[in-house]
Length: 218
Image 1 (cartoon, rainbow, N blue to C red):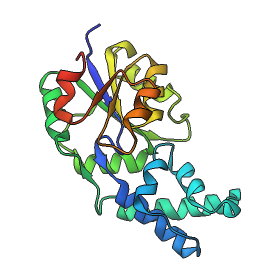
Image 2 (image 1 turned 30 degrees about the vertical axis):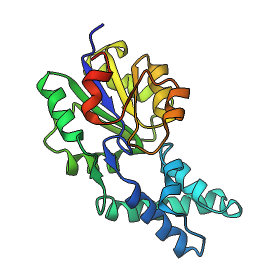
Image 3 (image 1 turned 45 degrees about the horizontal axis):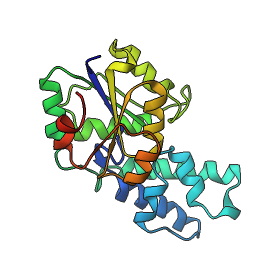
Image 4 (image 1 turned 60 degrees about the vertical axis):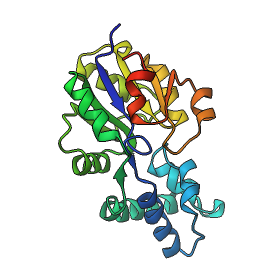
């Protein structure tokens, strides 16, 4: 089947969001008197939703549900104000998206980040790209690697999942794409490793966005 659409992850795939995520979480940790983490450590914490990131960032002794909920609310409030301080598109992303749009591909974004934050970042950085759907984490949907959200986007596009490519940077993305019946493409400029992507079902790997058309069967 010819591929007619491409769905992208956000963090570590379209945009480098790490500095702003780390900054917000570290400010919350400092406010509570807890140790902060180096920015690089957040590469392993991003990808499974902000609630998971907050839980794993807190000291084990502090991971009581009420405190996690409080810190999560504080982190989201801080991040909402600072999510675009240092966040930027990866080199070549805009050119890839424009080329896909020119070729008539339907485009979408599906992230485990809170939906309003996902939409805010995409609207600011990629307001000229004709995404047909920008979806993030929301209460009525299970998070990736559950394929429910991706399959909803497939229905919204009117394209069978076998006609879609999913592009992401983590194990969660590759597992979800495989479960959804999509062609899983892993990117090597993101937050995780080649080994992780291959071990979790990547059908193709990209070292740079310009490799998309040569490294995938699009």
